[in-house]
Each structure stands twice: as structure tokens, then as C-alpha cells.
Image (cartoon, rainbow, N blue to C red):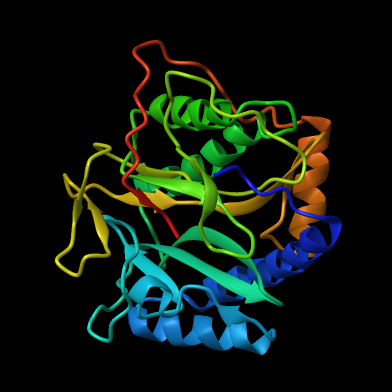
Length: 288
């Protein structure tokens, strides 16, 4: 299937959904503290989403039992909230959630720390975020999808990190998962040509150690195979002829980010290419 090109009306609805999701993430991050359970986080997240007149995208999606994926430390994605999982000082927590506003979806993830975290953890969180923005330099009409993928992995791998290959980003719109798949690792080809009006969920999942993951018995949660920390950063973006519009952030963040992207003023993002064999596409699952 081809990626859907959104109309002006659809884009405006997704833009509103994204601004709401940005607020949800901003407010949810302020609530994270040692001593709370991951089920507490889910309760707060659902209340926030519904307070803005939206529906939680993830709740009961393909059987997922919560409104937010709460993945702690070595959990990569799709951590299921539960009463017995207590957040501890120094933990890092990936929060992946989505909203539905008037039938249209927005999807985003952030990784935050509980209390004082290690320098290793803080660096991983920041560099995972910056890997997303490394990819954004190629997210414009006329560009190629896999140039985004290559830039993300080149940046992350320059620090010796592992870029998860078993999960990928995706198109998004009326449905949570639409074509195309958006890998975070370099491919042999350059992929489809990007067209103005495409909406994508781009979501680097970066491990401090190996890229390999293992799967929990619950059938949902991916964990690093070596027990190393993992971080996740995701936004819903709109492809335009001038570059990407970051949709899943607050209005204040959007103004700063989108102006910076238009000016191409991201001097702090290094997109140094690493040489070596490109990896074949071998996608098995999509992130949420």
C-alpha cells in the first residue's frame, strides 16, 4: 500500500491531536517520581488524555491493556503498567502514548529520569533525542525515506550504541499504523520518495549496548538482550516541501523546533556517516 497523502482538513485535525499529545507528555513527565508504580503512571496518563477530550490510542489496541507503554531501564518498548512495578531513584522511564482526536491519531514517546540519574543514562536519553533530529534533516518532500533511517543510525552508532532493528516507526493518520514502515537503521537502498502531506511516526529506539532484543512472556514487552539501558524518542511529523513539521509537541515547542528546522540551524546534530555494510530490511514489528 502507498502512504496516504493527507488533506488540509486532515492535517489540521492531526495538528490539534499532536498539540494535545505534546501537553500530555509535558504534564506526565512532571508527575514521574520514585515510589510510584507504573500503574499509577497509566492512570495519570489516561486522565490527562481524556481531560483534553481525546481517546487513548493504545488502550485495548490489539489487546494492549493500558493507555501508555511504560518501559523501565532495559525495557525497550511496550512495557505494560502494573501495580507491583515501582519506580526507583535513578530509573529511566520511556513513556510511549497516543491520542485520538475527532478520528485522527497522534503518537509520541519520551524518556525521562526518576530523581538523580547517571551520566550514562542522561547521555543516552539526550543522544536518542538528537538521533531523531539527525533524521529530520532528510524529512522533506523530494527526499528519500531511508535517508532518515540512515541518519538516525549513523548518529546513534557514532557513540557505540545499538539501534533496535526488530521494531520500526510507521505512517499514521486515521489508523495508528499506516504505510510506510520507517526503520531507524541504515538500509541498502534509499526507499520511497517523500511527498508533501505524508504523516509519519518516527521513533528511534536506542540501546546502550547491543541492538538485539528479547521478548517478555507477556508477548508485548521488548527488552535489551544484554540488560543494558534503552531510550525511546518519537514524534508524529508532517512532510512539507520545506522540511518536517513536528506535530506532537506543545505550541511553544512547535514554534521553536519548526523554526529551527526551517533555518537548518541544528549545528549540534552530527550526521557523520559510518562506513560498512548496510543492513537489509527485516522488519518484524512496529512500535506504537
